[in-house]
Image (cartoon, rainbow over all chains, first blue to last red; front, side, top):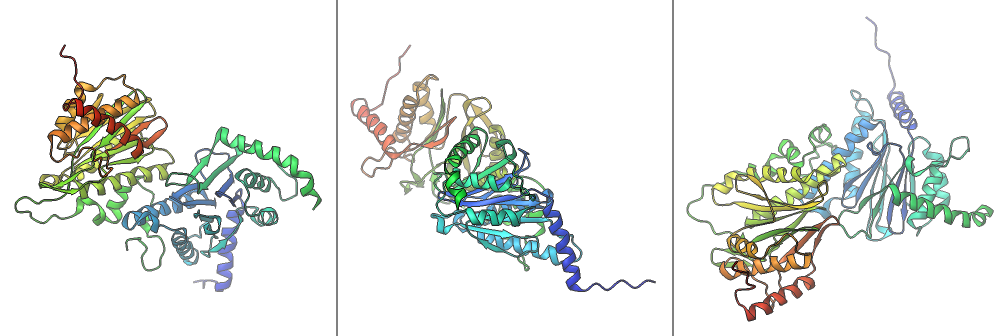
Length: 247
Length: 281
């Protein structure tokens, strides 16, 4: 009888992390940015039916990259968690922090239990507040850690490069069109530096808009509205392009 | 427990199991004790006096549908509440008005709103108007045990059918039996008077403003003859709730708008206490 190989815990965890990271890196990225009136989610996603960005609750939305069936499962779990919590207590008692905690516990348990395959997903849970200072954005990597993010954040295949690109250019008080322009620009950047121009058909865009009169602040930006926003921003950027190139 | 996170804090398996898009089904599987129909009812001897909501009226017009309700809740011969709200948006294109045991009815509406919202979020699409009406049927049926003990909830459901481009009304009985109404409908203790009144005033070609006036006349007539229905309360500025559902979605008329029409109805009644008169032939 052969004795099983000894694998050190460090090695086992490193292997699992490597496995999850590779799975995530295969997909396109999602970026999330704060703007004056809320939070905008932009994903490169040609599908109209399989969403990477979705509504969870009144002020909370969810974005994910990685394996579709796994994050879809987590999304449905999150909607059930939020709706049940809102029903038992009150709608105000459903918070992004609570949801992010539950997701972190779930991902963490799955990641470290040897019997289960680690999830190849990275999530963002965001909640829009009454003012930009009250906005909350949490990034949840595959291993169950939580990162509290501000301003702009990217997850997915090319997230390091996109993230640093966003960090340099994102500022407080951007309009929706400006934030969207920056997001599209960052998503279009390739590893080798060549830029692609993403069109409205390739994008999935949604916002948590704090100025929306309805209780549910989540709204998808689709079709004509999206094209119009992309146009206004490209018109604006051509005007401001030169000064920004100088610095 | 209520949040459903056990010892480890991770989502329990039930949350991550693919299944129905219905929140009611999920509750039934995961926390059946939270479903109103699953509560054991103590044996009741004699009549129990609980707040009851009264008259709800709905009417279809060219642009959509109106759902309106008076503001009174009664407990036997006591007025339990003067400003209760009995008309609620169910989602963007539908509304539900409730008559019957107020506490249970409000809970049912809360669950119904959540059911529609939950489906919408999980599926990424809204239910058809018929689908929504059927879900409400199921919920009323779940309450049958209590209804037979005297705690009935009888709603009226109205919505704008975006597929057929028209307003539609569904009425219910305590067993969840559902029937679509043409033109107008009413439920609750004052419904007999309200319906008779609307019968004489209703025409399918009325404008939104006219149909709101007709509905207010009907509620006035209901309050006139049914002590459990409240009329417009000018001194306290409590007016019926009137909601309009069109292709633009649900809209509740502001108190200022309703008060203006209610005052003109009241002024008319000073001349003719029985309201506008229809032709004999």
